[in-house]
Length: 264
Length: 71
Image 1 (cartoon, rainbow over the protein chains, first blue to last red):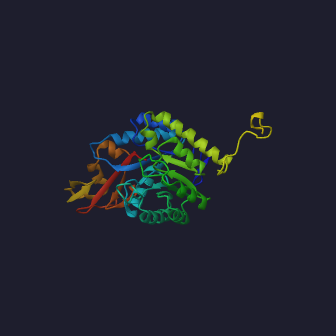
Image 2 (cartoon, helix red, strand yellow):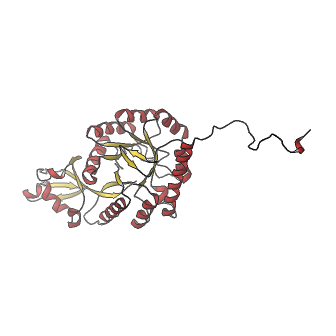
Image 3 (cartoon, rainbow over the protein chains, first blue to last red):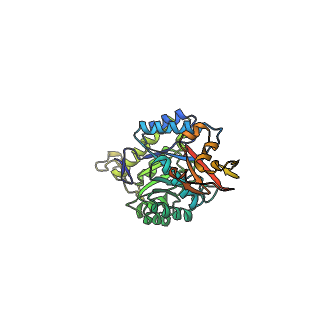
């Protein structure tokens, strides 16, 4: 069962970041082990004395080539719509993709998206021909507005970036899924454990975007495989149809012909 | 004429250096110049096709960005 992002069909429902790994080699191995075909990356200033950035870029290019994948540049660090639009245009020139993971941060403490600037940036970028994947809070109305602007993909947070706290507000996330049945919903940020990803997939989310949970694991390659399995389990559970919870106990074993010791 | 490049001050003495295409050769080392980068001038994106026709002015702020890992 594949994930479709702006018409592009993908074999994996996992989108993965390229940051924070112990080494470029482990990054490459973990991404390949995850099966993900979408790798996020960014743009930053570099002084003439620095060389390392180009090496990382070469590793990311090799990795994406190996898994027949796609780059998803982000606008990390932007705090205004203007900054985000400029950075998106720079990314498009470099990476030759209209996809942009749109981040506009409103608070330095919890890196919460500034949804007002996010909406403004989304509108401008769509007008410029971008295919926007906005990182937003788990606010139903904001998600609706993003969808109405033309975002086929919406990416609410599970919890603040890098916290690993998992799904802070499952009710909000379930409501977004219920109210936006046609949107491609990808849970982004705050995932800590494979079971977090599984839970979101059981809710009917279309995919998961994560980075720290794999990169900061003791064994990133094994954790990448664990997440791939968790996504599959959650997706299959959703498709299979999860039973309704019941208030009272119901015996699983048939009660007809119960043995003699319960006879009066 | 002084300009800021990635927040660092540079003095451009010759008129020819005030062209963005030429100035980038001064700002970047060889690997960077032959590598992958994109440019913004005073917060506005400047496409590669426009480097040759872009003149820098005093106190302009140039950002030269490179690919890096990200989440």
